[in-house]
Length: 64
Image 1 (tube, rainbow, N blue to C red):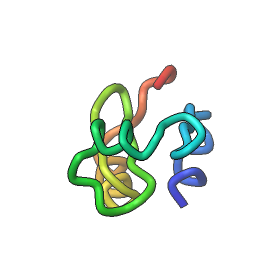
Image 2 (cartoon, rainbow, N blue to C red):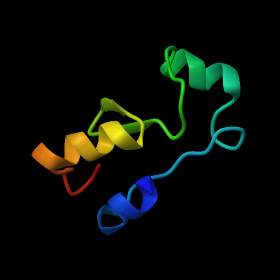
Image 3 (cartoon, one colour):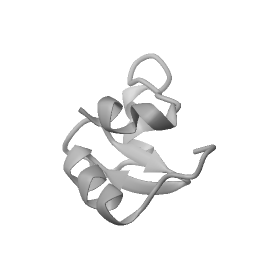
Image 4 (cartoon, one colour):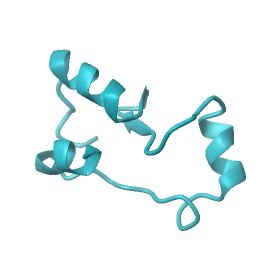
């Protein structure tokens, strides 16, 4: 659902066990309990539900 919500912005999508090891992921998101975890313009947004809230008031830059 997160990919669909952001599809028009052509985001860079990094995958666990492909782009990050589990250890690297939890260094970046130490309190993560859900997947995906989303970063927009350098800001850690959280998961899909947090993305929905964020997008209600914000718009990603063209190059995020």
